[in-house]
Length: 212
Image (cartoon, rainbow, N blue to C red; front, side):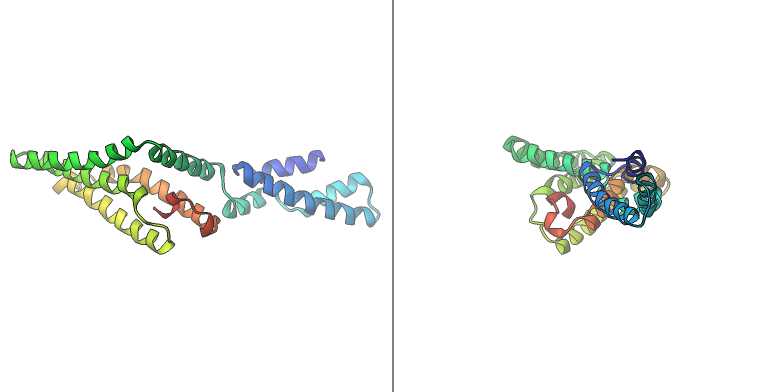
């Protein structure tokens, strides 16, 4: 592989996942060889054919932007791996399932106890936390395996998340909108990344986490 082609490939595959890089390299190598053979048959020397073949590939930075729109990036591949690892960790430990189910129930029971004791603000915060935890912890076990169910769940998820945060902050929710945004930003970033992955992968290859 020529230095010019290797330089082009490094630029064109920046931030792509390992599988995406391998796919691009295979496809580009085929295009390069075809363009080089055409140049040689046209009377070009070997060095000239190399340069012409690389030039025919176009701008590497432009190609990189196009590849990142259709192929998985390193960050997206890492999110898929981490999600798969978390799912396996939960499924392989039955006690962890019970713990995840018990935590929101405990929070809601504590909310009821504080409400009866007159601590309304604490009760409201615990209730919001219990509802949020219940939604997030129960999601992996729900029968959501179609795009339409996934869309419905995500709408409900965002409505509950925004509602629970509003409940936790109470009347001061609007004044603390910057804090609400800070709380929701990590979830929004994860959802934005998942949207990108859904667009790039066929539905048949979606893991459970992409439906949620």
